[in-house]
Image: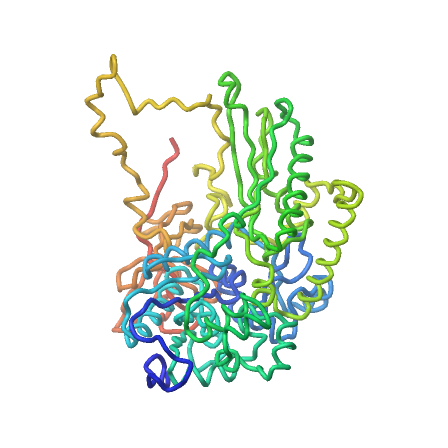
Length: 446
Length: 146
């Protein structure tokens, strides 16, 4: 790796900090869902594989081979029927239980080899490294790269730098440029630093949205390097504090914390006690649906996206004479969303998993957890034009929905009740076994 | 094919009145600490014994008789650890022609092979790119019908 991590210091105006300070890594699982499937089905190696959204609606994860066939993110499954019939591709229903388990395995390995892990999404984790000399850092990163792959069978890309924004950029480099072999350690002031930042377009910088790109272009700021050289104060005056932070981060000055401010914004909860104890599936499901829609509204109001939906039920603990059961379940959303429909579906799914007849429940609730800033997530996580278009459409729909409900009273427009049973059956037509979480679905060896 | 002897992962919750009784915190009369108190919480956990590294440990089951001579029977539960570097003599899980199989890692005339315990199956050269070690079998759990 030419000049990586040990570049000449003080070579540029930008560079200030260097040396043994804490470093931040972004570990990104490559084509995560597909990799989880391949871990237990090696025959899928080298084959174009796609994973479908809930409902088997559209493609939400693609292997490199499928990308090479020009199948875009979000392609509806029916459009792929010809390829499927010719047996040129494999399409699988999503298997969230498997993905969730594999994700926590990756996290565990990272925890063992770092000074702290903060999951950013199901397949991306920020990791802190303390006290590594520059030349050690790269070796350690390399080791991490091999260990995660060997232990969990999930291939990853490793990007390490002084700030999260730079780590994100390093990760992209590690993944896209073959010369790096999946590992990139980026230090301000090194030769690679300037070369890389010059190559990276603004739109690919974490936290810089499409509209900003146009406005910045008017100022003559085109590349990540241009933004890194800009005056943060000026950026703040003309744009926002958020962009100022991005600018500083590109300079190698950490501004975005591991635990981002706004702890209160990290979760949204809607729950209520029922007027009386009930064991009616219908009734409780109805309540859950209401809570989910309400939570989604709150979510949109604060401009966040949720990554998971948590549902709980409680029996009456002041009545020790009746059977007690207070279960909960979390369902991951395929990608961060504020769409009522996605959240509703996930909540219903969680409910179906935990509901048991013959218990009389007193209280239920829906919590949206693992929230992200909508503006920050938009580009980094969903940056294909197709999903962008889809997102905008969904944004418009949700805005209309909120406006109507605001004007004409809450609950004027809600989502109809789909039959949960039928939806369940449809959803996982092609799901692989939950290899790691169910005794009766373990891999069978000959 | 589900194995009838295995405990289902998601049993129906037991009906238990709340708040939970806490039988371990106190015993005997009038608040005297139980002599057993110092030994609380010390139960033997099979996980602790068989699973050294949860992140890299996978459970798998066996079908067929190819490893019977080595004490691995149909329906047995394997504890597979992918963190272990395979050495000759290890029983391991390998990918062979796109499938996961259980084999023994052996050197035959200095060359690595995946072999079966059953002479009906021929040794497979392990150097082949299509054949790779997936994980090492750390333990075999054989349950009896009781």
